[in-house]
Length: 400
Ligand code: PMT
Image (cartoon, rainbow, N blue to C red; front, side):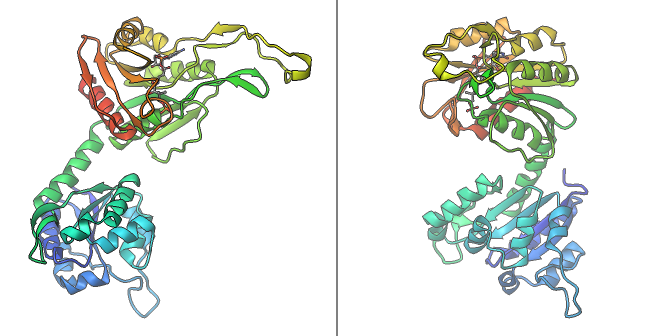
């Protein structure tokens, strides 16, 4: 799993720095190429010579390599790496990472790093439990960094509690697990629809809904993180996508979304249809802005939009998987199950339309997955990212 992987091993000033030598040795044994980057304080705990001997590479710890004008490029380092692992990470380094305080080369490499970052904190129990540290860790999670939780045990202070850096074997397992997850969907093409559709009434007005795109974008990001080539067909939302594995196609109306989905589905291994597609659109679109002064009342004549999920369901081959969504009020199980059958889906994700912490707009969701055999799994309230992971796990279990 780690063969030929390029890893930046960041080491900071903690007594646990001695374990970094064991970790480094294991990385090299697994076939990884490791570049050690140390903070100045780390050098008080472990000699750079030990680390450069184990990694067979000079350790980087200063911005300038010598007094002759040569310098260490943190940007090149950030682009070179397949992953950055900071172990041990002190409270100070975690705080600097969270707030972008770039006063040493480890932090500048972190800020330039395009690859995933794993962080193994090491500190005293009270420092770890302090709200400032927890808030900083929360920030790092929100940046997509993976935190390898410290263990409970004896600490350098003599106290016993949570704060001890995980053992090198556990850190190595987390790194391998990360690469394993990233390759689960390698070579798979996944189509994702997200966001609302806007159906024009006239040049300035539309019929739409409250979908923010958050759920669908989390699914697209999650699939790309796990190695898939994602085509994201996005309705009008303000969200951005940054993952290089996502190709985004922006659409406005249900008809446009349908055309894009029908074009890209045949070459896809799976589709996850999360968009809140307008079921109806105005039968005619006024060419000019409808003027209020000329019309005190207005009746909209609506006509049905294409059902994208049902159309893809009808053209689905045996080697393709389709997941749909159902947004329901009240007991949605019978209605979601009926949609699953009618649209020929492999599974459907039911989420509530009338709860303040789930469904439209918010960052969390409460989902139930129902499959075509009638099996049902309820999940607790989670972030949309974690709900996306559950949905992607279900998809992976169904892919041929
Ligand atoms: O975007 P967020 O703010 O994060 O909110 C997420 C969400 C609530 C929009 C999302 O989780 C969700 O539930 N999406 C589906 C909403 C919906 O349209 O549900 P539905 O029960 O009306 O549709 C059933 C399925 O058919 C869906 O997969 C839908 O994409 C699809 N459909 C519906 C109508 C239509 N004309 N074409 C379709 O493909």
